[in-house]
Image (cartoon, rainbow, N blue to C red):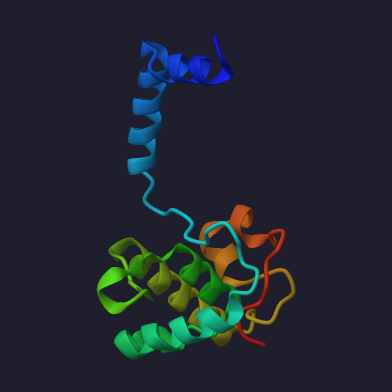
Length: 142
């Protein structure tokens, strides 16, 4: 039996089909998938600067968000709207998330903790697992 025949036999097996169905169901339940694609954050700054500006035009309340990491987080998790030639679409889930980030950012600006090293709105809203700098992270606008 050739390597290809073994592969096909493995993929049509009942065990594989059950595992595949379980994985597909799990993927459908993911409410907040990353939308970075295979290139990650590399070379995204210019593209995202324009996409963020388009989002702010569509949803003016987003202009209160100033934190670059909040903007990067949002754009990395928003799907592209195929009806508007690839502009980012604000989903219901991400709207709630961005409203939380905007509120936290405003509170941090008011109480003076916004510029404290090691504290940012993402860390404050989501906890330390989202707060650390990730490998390959680039600031959106500098």
